[in-house]
Image (tube, rainbow, N blue to C red):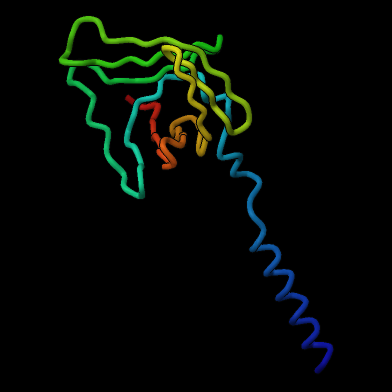
Length: 138
């Protein structure tokens, strides 16, 4: 009986270990290969509240574009004007940190999520965390 009990515990322990291990197939939450893209704002999180982005126009959607040469472009369509307002700067990215400099203002973000379709970054402003959520789908 003791042998059977020991065998049962051993099998139960092996089953627990096999099911409790995380999957390495999920990949990292941040894959910098996906950064060089056009990213369209979806929402902003501030103080536990998520606010949907409402700046898109019927004639075009605002976006931030990261180019492989280290250039970042912020494009803002306003009242469907012919030429969208564009601000250009530079960026660097390493591991889970993104730093942008646009119009002389440097901001450092923590990259919370980055895959082919989703991009989330967080920065701190006046002691509060602000998370920006983007999608690659216009």
